Image 1 (tube, one colour):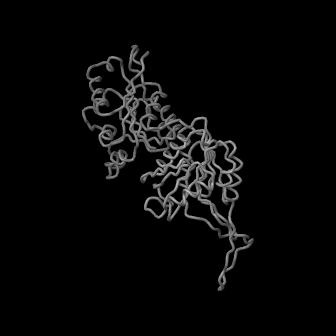
Image 2 (cartoon, rainbow, N blue to C red):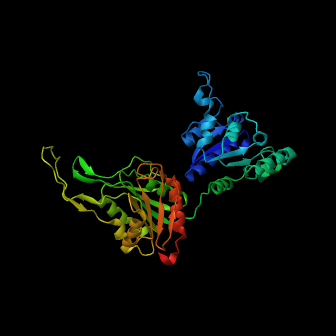
Image 3 (spheres, rainbow, N blue to C red):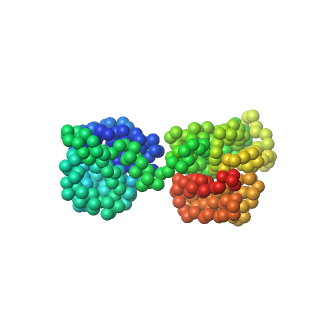
Length: 402
């Protein structure tokens, strides 16, 4: 998920650097937006170094050498559309007033008006400014519009006064962000083993059998589990995807390698989600040298690969086991049959011929088939959203039925 962090001009602006780090630990992608006043307290370079991203400091992206361009002129719209949340910390009395009265005076206030994402503000200011009726009226207006306010702490302030106005603790701000985004830590203490991607079965040193899986669903599952607090082991076939932060990544190539890696790590897992598109067959004998082209027809003898899901099903004990079924016809019948044969607790099935549900897409359309007989069809969602729905149902499985 991506959030914009607005930093405004108060002494507490330096605390936003620590806040960036904590948000990153929550697996959030942070885009920093600074007001001019904020730059009097902390530099944009600090946030650029922490986030690895451009820090937005001007409405039109001007500098001394280059004029504004069309792209920078509408950047607030682009940012507004791609963020999942706008957080302003510290939020000064000035920015709260701009937000409350719809004043688009700079990039941050314009971004507030342009985004439909939820908004969280963490005010910080002098105690008299905090208690002033104008500030409290502005906050009441913002709350009535659905803005989430993290009230400041009380204590000794930079101005020498004592009272409310100190920026709330970083953990309090992060907790509110997590709550608003629906990020849960309900998998803490659990270990999730996830498989992803396609496997490759060698025909000769330059050719192999594989399938069209990109690994996106498996990587989304690994990221969702990590965000929800699980320790995650990701056993992955070859992909071009970025490994989610904090995940124990085990790259493999063939079905046999995946089988060995999964069996080696299965004992430490509470939940195993087999999202990889494992090859069902492999050449009976891979050729040691490149096969030369000829004019005659070639017959390739294949043999079944190990059935990793079925092996796990026979030995799963109290672990929850989830399998996937990519189908092109008779989805319900095939998924129910696979659920029974493999000894799984859930099969996630989809018709890969549907638009938005096939391989190498960012979305998926799946039905969850559970051992208690339920079928839960999901609409077209992003693969990350699908991943979270899968873990929601995993957590709902009664322990006695594992």
